[in-house]
Image 1 (cartoon, rainbow, N blue to C red):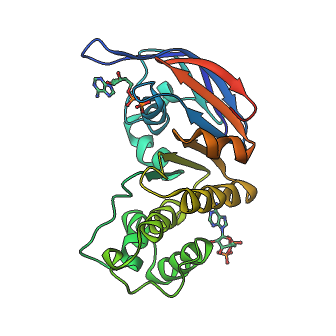
Image 2 (cartoon, rainbow, N blue to C red; image 1 turned 180 degrees about the vertical axis):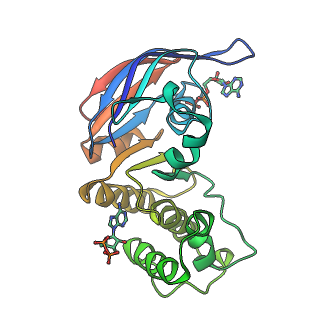
Length: 223
Ligand code: ADP
Ligand code: ADP
């Protein structure tokens, strides 16, 4: 998926200007980090891509299509093309790993056979095949985050967005999770990861977009 922001701004109803004059172009298949202090606007930028929030001004093009031209009926379709990973992974502890990962497929009405095949493929990609029947509560923090990633990719999204995916993990596990994102990037998925972890970002050698008070203050090589 290709993402282009042209002079985008977001002002919340509170009056808070979360993003100002943000412009960047992420090519199909590119991987980029999004950094910046807490409150810099990272989550807001991702919410605009997901159409959870709407921009106040400027233009957002996804694969060349202006998001403002998408009707309400197209929004679920748009969101299905995007996989999202959160810091607290938001797993459901009342069901197995399998059913957590299967959730997006159930919502989109996939056939049970397809679901079983895709869930196994996704768990395989994150190294958790064999843990389908476990309750996520029985897994370590790093494993739980992998389940969250499997769930994000089970629909084979064209874009993977991660908001502080390593926030609760130690450096070794964080590096493993970042390597996973890199593998999806190698498979052709566009990847954007918001993170505070500058040391990790520097080692990964991808493009880094830095936000400061809602503005892009740097766009270039590894931090
Ligand atoms: P980050 O993800 O970099 O921490 P956010 O995008 O969450 O930054 O926040 C950017 C700014 O917008 C902050 O000042 C934050 O308080 C404000 N903000 C975020 N969400 C809302 C909201 N729903 N209503 C009002 N202000 C918000
Ligand atoms: P099939 O035709 O057997 O469904 P595909 O050729 O569509 O298989 O895909 C091959 C494998 O690659 C599958 O296991 C699928 O899960 C995986 N795959 C393809 N694209 C992605 C993606 N973006 N994210 C995760 N897995 C993917």
